[in-house]
Length: 132
Image (cartoon, rainbow, N blue to C red; front, side):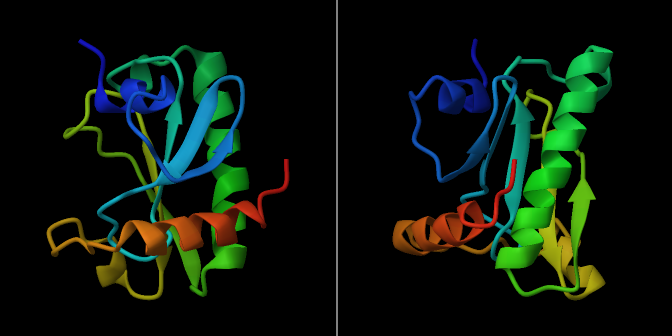
């Protein structure tokens, strides 16, 4: 069965897209830890990030770096935190999280619930900074 991320890639579920390449996709987390929390995924459905072939792993990380730099320009923060957890969704992904404090990357705290309009505005702001 296709993961929720594969359904997003296939256009079956909408997302607030930030950037896309032939092999990767970046979009906003709909229940972010902080404003601008972005998910970066390979288009190839692989459950565990270390099971990706080397080429896809490198492409994913370089893509995440470029997207992370755009998020950092668009969203006021001290830096972008990255994490790979991969337990909730069986599809490799990297979290890019704008940080001002260590608590901003605490996944046990309640998630934000921004409106679709807010997510759309944040995505547009980040897209303007994407430089590929």
